[in-house]
Image (cartoon, rainbow, N blue to C red; front, side):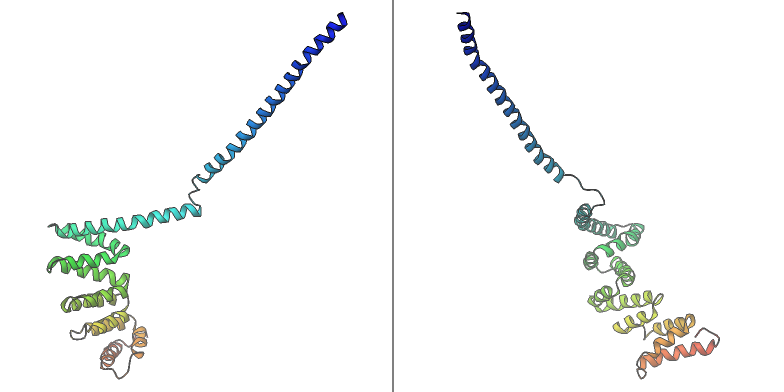
Length: 243
């Protein structure tokens, strides 16, 4: 009977043992699945975080972003400069206007010259408009000669003559040949002796350059003959000058 009882006990304990083993296996499988699920979930998070990471300041992508920001900011800066310039021009303080022409105008001409053209056009005829136009001419002709010449050509006759004369005198200090070219383009500088004076100074400072330039001009053109005579006059007065 004792043996039968032991066998019966073992018989009834066996399902429990099997149940415990099955439960352990299920638990292990669940833990493993959870581990892999967590691992799979982490990867997209890490990837997303990486994709949103701020690039180094000197990286190409960051440089492009900064450049785009600069392009967006530039028009706003130009508008601000234009507003400040017009405000200064309307002020009664002459010193304020002069400061605006010396500080604000050069930056605006560099950034957006079309705004400057618009400001000049909006000024009423008078001393303020003349001062602005003359200063625009002086600065723009050295900054962008072709653009300045095109603008000068768009002015009315009186303002065109005045601005062309200013452009000629401004260029004469650094490039007499260009000064003469601009003067002849707008028909200024010959009726008052300005071009002869420019050529005289040029021949005095560098006779060789003046002669090389005059030799390339049409020989039978009365304008060439006039200027060549002035150069030769200077050379005759100073035979020891640099050729």
